[in-house]
Length: 185
Image (cartoon, rainbow, N blue to C red; front, side, top):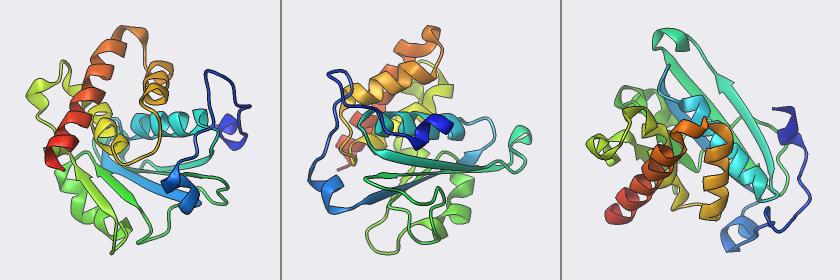
């Protein structure tokens, strides 16, 4: 992701968004955790892309483990005005997005003790998803309700990172995640 290390020039299609939350905190830390094949890395790619489209500095790291065999996978995404390191330090994640309930205990130490937000896959009613493989994007929808990234930038990032044939199903999954989180709040 070499391109993630430089900022785009703001344009009409890619406005630089600075809202109260982003201006108060210089770096936002998000950790995705799950099992191989659940789309942990793709979810982190989409978040990275959406933040980058807002003109933010973005750094990303991945830990694959035995991901091809269903083992643990984590991916850190850090974004803000200036990000020095791609790794989220222990107990510094503002948001922990867990796609497999079995990974909650493993990943919980990464979450801030006071003020961190834990989002788990049981938030989403998977029977509402057109494709169960869209759970990762539904979880991004839930996460998006906390972040000051415009919904249109999320949609652009989803389209840019997924094959065209699954765009509509994933935009729908994203909206299901937003709705699920809004009902929970």
